[in-house]
Image (cartoon, rainbow, N blue to C red):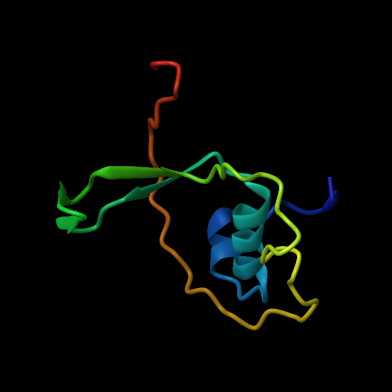
Length: 106
């Protein structure tokens, strides 16, 4: 364990602490490495997306899988410069979900 003589920080302690580049780094991991098979969000209000009604409280999912897993020579990935990122992504409010189910019918 990295912190053998102390208690691990809580989720709220991490989310309430200003950690430079953490949000952007995690976003890049998700975008480039596909470390999350799907992203789940809960609608905060009634809305409509592309003609489909989504009620408040509905769980929506999207996959992060990309068909082109090997980038070509002209891709954005290969043309990235090694410059520090300065973008700050706004912190999100996470809603703990009790049962997401799975793709095996649970």
